[in-house]
Image (cartoon, rainbow, N blue to C red):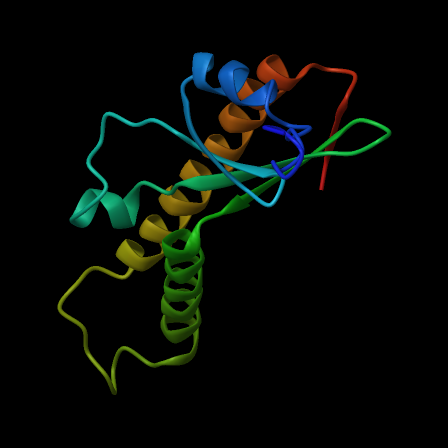
Length: 140
């Protein structure tokens, strides 16, 4: 009885190849697909800190498909760091605590990172919509 004790077929299995065609690397765990867009930029070094990545979780429901697009762990860390940098720039006096960098640097870095993160979320969301289908997606 070959299939009697086999695990049931995954409800999100047909979505995996469609996400792969849209340029994602896909893994599955407990019926949830986790997808990340493939990149030309390396996943290490200074570029990894400045260029944010997002993770997509796709779960099949009876009603449709639920997707959740969130920053990955390093992107969350960078958000905390640039927020802390902006707060420090606002609260510390330059006369009492001089710095070796220009005053606009921290604000510029925070702005560039947040804009890049928003752009990554929008581009990834559009690619997921193309792969999964427009009517069945609920971003969560």
